[in-house]
Image (tube, rainbow, N blue to C red):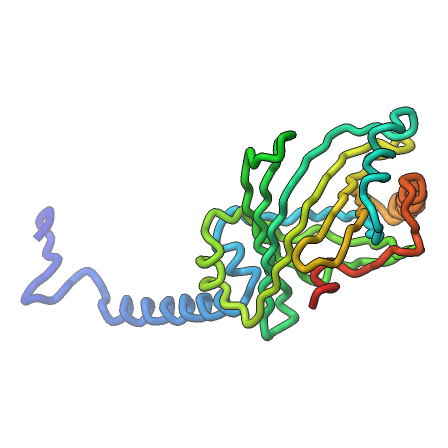
Amino acid sequence: MVNGKWLMRDKELLTVDEEAIIHASQEYAKKIDTFLATRETSLLSKLLAIGGASEEESFEIQAKVRVKDLHPIIEKLTSSVSEIEVLKKRHYKEYDVYFFFTDVEQGIIRYREDDFLAEDGKVENVRGRLTLIGPTNEGQFEQEVLLSRSRYLAPATQSLRFYREYFKPHLEKEIEKDRLRFLVRFEDTEFFINLDEIHNPKIGCFLEVKSRTWSRQDAEIKSQLVTKLINFLGADIEEATSEDYIEMVR
């Protein structure tokens, strides 16, 4: 009895419909089971469940060119101060592990460890990230210049073993590379320039140029500037490729 009112008598609740509650809880249990089953088969849902995932609905123009030697490009970047302005420079060692799945429509999960290197070559910081890679190619311009959309990203705060057991891929591929990354201003437009040397597997050196874009017209203009910038840096635009690194090694 509470406040003069009987709540239970002879082991029977008087103010609660037990059968209705049990029935409702069973219905909720079915919904939870459905949600968990769906999440277990959806890479995006599993990535979001980790926490910290984000999607940037922006687009970028990008082009990748195979080169024999990166040093002439570095020299061009650092000596042509009147024609190109270097706003920022970073040096990384990047270790990528790609998770492939039976359902190819789900996409690919990339686990990346970025080792930030100081001027003396020592690691000064380490960052881990997960990326869900889906069909991101939104268009193609001349000279293999691509228009692509940003992907889902999440911080990787656990070990590679944890994510391997969590996502359960049926196949893995690894890529290791040394990357010099420049943020530059060329003809009043900002570009990111990646100078990559792929060490594992050994597939060579590449110049990659990227820039954010906001409209189809802007993308058209920047695609022409990308080609001009590649030529300015002394690379052969005929060596351009639309393949991502993981497509080269599969």
